[in-house]
Image (cartoon, rainbow, N blue to C red; front, side, top):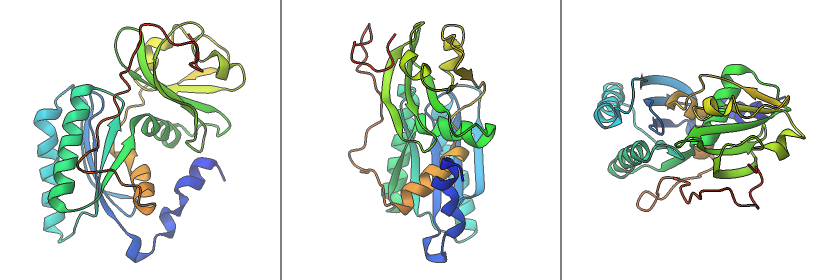
Length: 250
């Protein structure tokens, strides 16, 4: 059994008292999306890829989901939100909405790491070899990205960090492993990182539908965020050059 399957296969083992209805919110990039899940199944979802329209669309999407819930006499058991890194504005809008919902509904708040979300999206949609490593990349500005490196069990090989992309970026990990790059930051890295162990997957975007597995896992483990004091994961203690002790290098 592949590691990613081991992480999430217990969806099928949920007992009735463990079933959870989770409202998932993703606004970390230009995509605005909301999904309602129950026991790992999608009940309702909305997505928009047209740009940074989160301020106008997110509340409407949430209201649609709440109407769905009320019409079926359901209850929401938790609110999950993509916590970053990503767009400053998008993260603030998403977290603010999620906090308000969690507080108003008196349910737990779940924070989903956006870089891990990209990895899960790549795994679920591309059936990647579980022996490779995964390097999600979220566009920051110029040649900067937010990134990390994970194994197939979502354990960090390199912790999340900001990085300026150069020809020698990721050289330490690429010299020992095949690495799959994904996310909107990988588009500008494709022409710079030229290594036989580097593989790029286009079109992988963080969306609420792909949050479900991570949100369900957090709910089962009671891994909840503080509704009052949670802040986005900005990763923006950024420097003009990458420090020498950074594992990825430049």
